[in-house]
Length: 233
Image 1: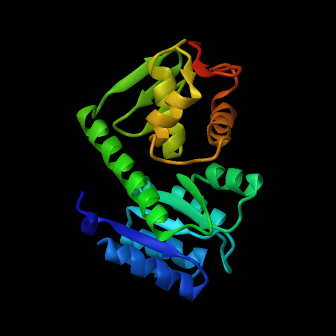
Image 2: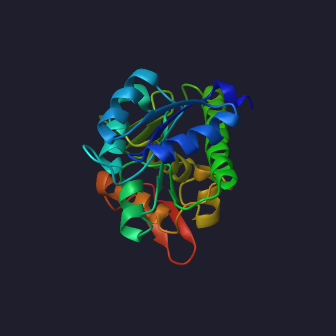
């Protein structure tokens, strides 16, 4: 892949971290922009439309969680990846990051080569998903009272359009593609996040819970110790 085509927005309130990250990522060919707080990040992201936003959690003016939620609310940034890079490694902080719409949660300290590998894996997965979407453009999946509109990236429930964060949409699309099939956690990680992406053990659980809050509990069934399946309504 030609990494010089990819725009990355780095967000951190510590200038030395921004300089360090910028240096390493620019050496890989990425186009780099920076912001020092969440509010500035949202403004720049709206203008720049980066492929990836890499942001800290604890920042002044607007923290990373709130910034991620703002970015996720923008239609023009629906394909922008958001990854957290933070020293906050607590479970509740990671869950908050994924609930806000984050695609990955990376804890500091991390070696530059490992970080770059994570970033490239995210972008490769995004590129593959986009190609699959182009090949399947306009396709719809209808199951009971739910419709998955892949062309518009929309869920339609009983005529009501529901906009889902990208990973929730991809997870539901996977489950609904084969009703009653039990997808193992390993399959879900591979198909939705990519087997090169390292995410927390509770990532799937968080996204399933968010889907149930929006759809109701009857659609997705937990198969204890194995995974999840979609039940035809």
